[in-house]
Length: 81
Image (cartoon, rainbow, N blue to C red; front, side, top):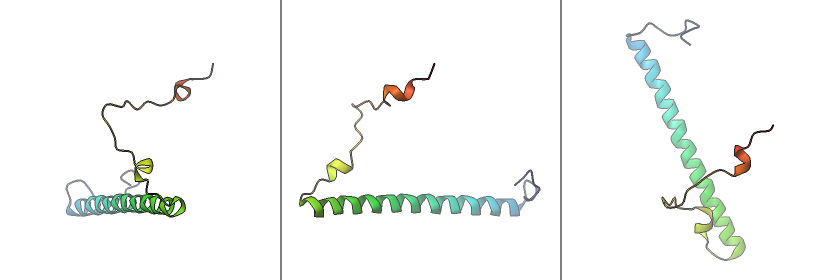
């Protein structure tokens, strides 16, 4: 937006307000996305419990353990000749 001349000059209150509004919107959208994904995960776990008759949250949500090293598969690191 700066290259198109749509922002006010540096050091003005209007620029601060615009940047603050952009950051606020980004924070709201980020938190909303986290809430939506968490809610969907809870729905998937609940649906699996209804379908199987067993509660198995641990199969869907794995706790990060520092003693397990997570690496991508070797095929993801190979380049074609």
